[in-house]
Length: 378
Image (tube, rainbow, N blue to C red; front, side, top):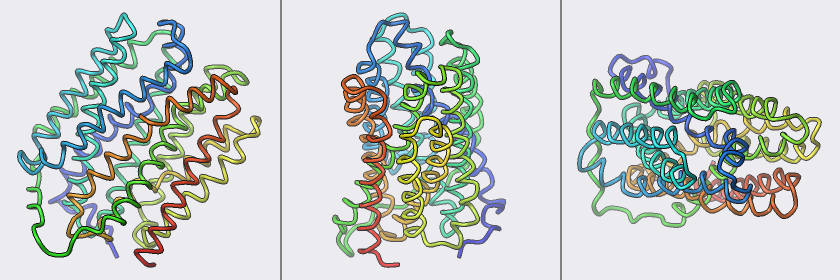
């Protein structure tokens, strides 16, 4: 059972601090695009089906870097990869802030996605390696801070609307601060790749790939489309606030998961969490209670990503550093593949289809988790 002392160990305190700062920034990026959709559509004259391309290209860039991250980390170590991710993310934000044409928005989102992908995988792997048996609570903690950053960005967008640049400038400044902190990081060396021994259980890998593909589709899907779903009934300001409340629920859920994940096995926690999210999305079809339902969705989804990583490390301890980038790459392909599909469905049938599409993605994630539980045992 992980102990609380592991989170307070002086040898890992710096790692935890840098990881928390980096994930505050990444959370801000993750929730940036959805609240900007109405303003982007108005400023650049694009339709609801086209604006989803911003999310797709961001996660396509993230996917590309996650695929490369395993070899980059083994070759250069954690610190150079983290610094490169921060510089790339800052460049993407700068392009978005200065964009005067739609294609520049696409370029900025893709560049930001490259940095986001590097930070996502390198920070998660760094924390998992540094904290070892305390990985589940530590991962839930930094991902709670991720949710805090994601909660703040929609509020900034609503506060400065219809101006696009100020929230981006704030994120650029935060990125510069994290860059200075990361430059002082003393990181552990990555493990050498496993050669020989037991073969990779590719069926399990496929199960985790599907779990993360559908999970990130669901998490990002709610953040990206809740504003569009609620704006016709409550207005842009309140709809953006509902997005912030959703990320606040994600943050709270991960904070609560820090002590719980030290006592509940990862598989059981993932299955229970996805079940709560699925039920809440079913309720979200009733618009008067939808803001509350989306908050419950956030609470349900909150522990899945970090606890799933701990589950993967337990299920495949000798291959975790090689398999984790595969699962995270699949996670970033989720929004790439599904954001345009949801956008097309919304254009065809209206915003009422949004909870249905999101509930379907959570259901598939739950099915994969149940299958993994049957293969890995209780």
